[in-house]
Image 1: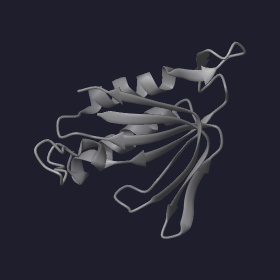
Image 2 (image 1 turned 30 degrees about the vertical axis):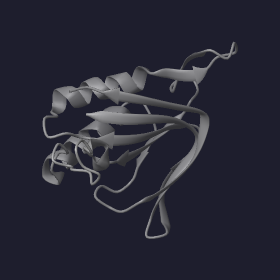
Image 3 (image 1 turned 90 degrees about the horizontal axis):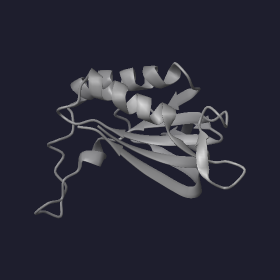
Image 4 (image 1 turned 45 degrees about the horizontal axis):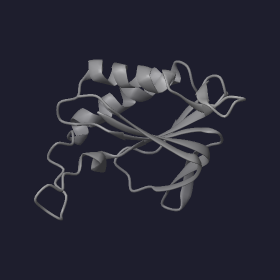
Amino acid sequence: MRVIVQRVKQASVEVKHKEVASISKGYLLYIGLSDTDNEKIVEKVATKVKNLRIFEDEHQKMNLSLKQVNGSILAVSQFTLYGDTKGNNRPSFIRAARPEVAKPLYESFIAHLKEEFDVKSGIFQEDMDILSVNDGPVTIIIEID
């Protein structure tokens, strides 16, 4: 499982030119699931995201968690995080989980985050426009196999 975490001042998702979700301060998550991911991995990554401390404290040190700054999460499924360009210019997505496997794991990941945070999400398997104002910028990659 791969998750790109971007610290944002605001972010939103549009589908067919219509806004379907938005947040102010928080995390914009791009979530990729592989063909070997399972519920145990989903739980580990969710715990890591919940406890990540990438907001600055009064000394400008990244020391505060999302909970400490009362932030929100915007989650977007992104199978292209498993695009493999080794030996080719056209990416192969063979390692990405098939939609029927990825969707329940994605929904489980969102459910774990909703235990503690206000979570909005894009629409699984839709073509989306993502609008964001990055803060920093701060971008963290979390990967657990």
